[in-house]
Every structure is written in C-alpha cells, then in structure tokens.
Image (cartoon, rainbow, N blue to C red; front, side):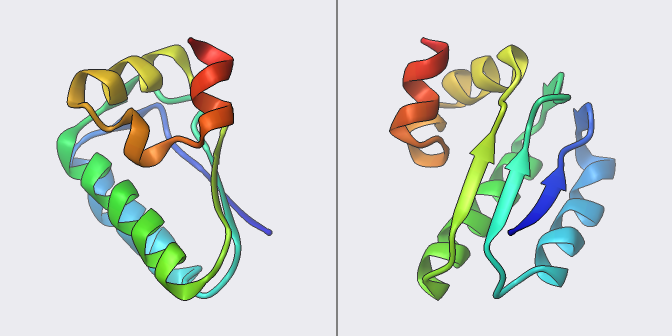
Length: 94
C-alpha cells in the first residue's frame, strides 16, 4: 500500500501538488496520513473527495489514517466527515 502524508497546511498552494501526488499513484491501494494537518481548505478537500471516489471506482483501497483534531473539525464544518472518513475513524475521534 502506498502512503501519502498530508502537509500541515492544505491551502490553494498545496492543491496542485496534492492532485499530482494522487495522479501518480492512481491504480494502487493508498493510505492518506492526515496526522499533521492543521488547516484544510475547500479545494484540497475537493481533491481528497475526488480521489476517494476515483479509488472506489477503480476498486482499490483508499484509507485515511491518523486524522488530526483540526482535520476532523474542518471536515465536520464542511459537512464532509461522512463522505471522507470510515466509520471506524469517525467513531475513534467522536
């Protein structure tokens, strides 16, 4: 399984590199480590959601691990926690 460690700040500047990181790994099972995330912007959230959907369409594993409290709170504020997180991850931080 391939891993992508998300940076501390996922803003407009991080969107291009984030998209490229996913495109390079398309077709492989992937683990996304969100432990260091302190800021999550809307565009990067869209990239994460699109990646999860793409991996599901390809029948490949996509997991988000070790989400920081800030990452989880931002997902909840956007109303995207149910769309991006597994039930285990949601329950672990609730």
